[in-house]
Structures are given as structure tokens and as C-alpha cells.
Image (cartoon, rainbow, N blue to C red; front, side, top):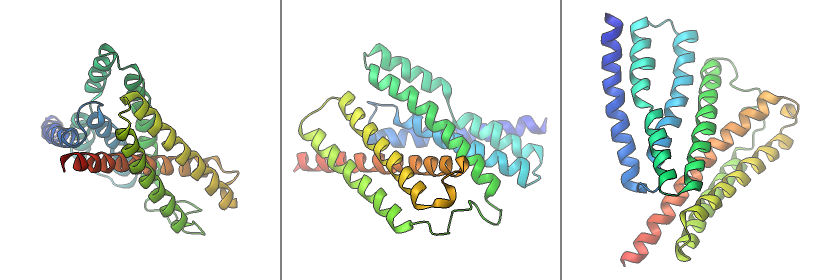
Length: 235
């Protein structure tokens, strides 16, 4: 009985949080693409991996707390049904590229986010999160690469708005930009840090981190570029 009450309380909090976060994102980016649901599911997948590892392996929390957070809150916060409905709407509208992009990003990013959450949860309280972290990692170069991606995303958004390109072309441009950023930074770090060249776990970790930060930078740059263009039009 206590578990049901805990799940009900956690579920109500998760549903309200999803509503507020998703609508906040849609109010900024619009509803041309399901950004809100994508962010909800990716962030929820990360929290599921991270908190599951902490609650089951690191801390001996009571079953009611685990049920409230993992089953209740995260179960109501994430939403596969909304993802399916929005994807079908995109197919009905004829936006095939957006629909397949939503399927691809949802599957890949959710898996990567959950995996990264598990890895982070397992290593958070260890002596060294990764054997290469903090040992010659070129932080300045990494920051500069992500700043460059952010600025390129702003420039790309302004140019795409200037030439009034369609949503499919815009999506393709940002996917290519993200792919180039993620692959090039991963390869560069792999050769920069010789201790991880033959370690699959290390390479996959770097790829996941670069992908997550890359998505954030490209998305933020695109949003800023769109805001700057709308500001120009309003003047």
C-alpha cells in the first residue's frame, strides 16, 4: 500500500514537471518539431540510468523511495505515447524527414543518455571517473570546439532564415553539423590521448559526451540564431 501511495505522489509530480518543461520548450521553439517531447525523453532516460544505479548499487534506499522516483516520477515524466503520436502526426502532414529524424534522435539519444547515466552513476564515487579524465585532457581546446559549434549553428540558422529554406533542409544542415562536430572531436581526442586508443569503453565514453554537448551547443546556437533573426525582423 505504501508503494502505491509513493508511486501516485511521484507520478503526479512527474506529470506536472513534464507539462511545465515541455510547454516551456515549445513556447520558445514552436511546435514545428517535437523538441519538447524529445528533451523530456532524453533527460528522463539519463535520470533513469543515473538514479537507478545510485539507488540500487550505491545507496540502500527504501523501496518506497525507489518506487516514487523511478516508477512514479520518471514513469510519468517520460512519455513514449506522446512521441508515437507526434511522429504519426508528422507522417500525416507529409513531413517524412522530420518524422524519421524524430525516430532516429529519440532512439539514439535516449539510449546514449541512459548509458551515460549508468556509467556516471557507477563511477561517480570512485577514485577516478575515467582513467583519462583530468590527466592531460585538453579542456581549453574542447571548450573552444564547442564554442565554435555554437557560433556555426548561429551562423547557419541566420543563413537558413535569410534564404527561407524549408524545415527538411534546416534539419539536414544541423544533423551534418552535429555529426562533423561529434566525429571529428572524438577522433581528435582519441589521437590526443594515447592511453584510450585501444580502449573501446574510453572511445565510446568520449563519443557519448561529445554527442550530448554537441546537441546542446547546436540546439542552443540554432535557438539564438532564430531569436536574432526575429529580432531583426521586428526592428
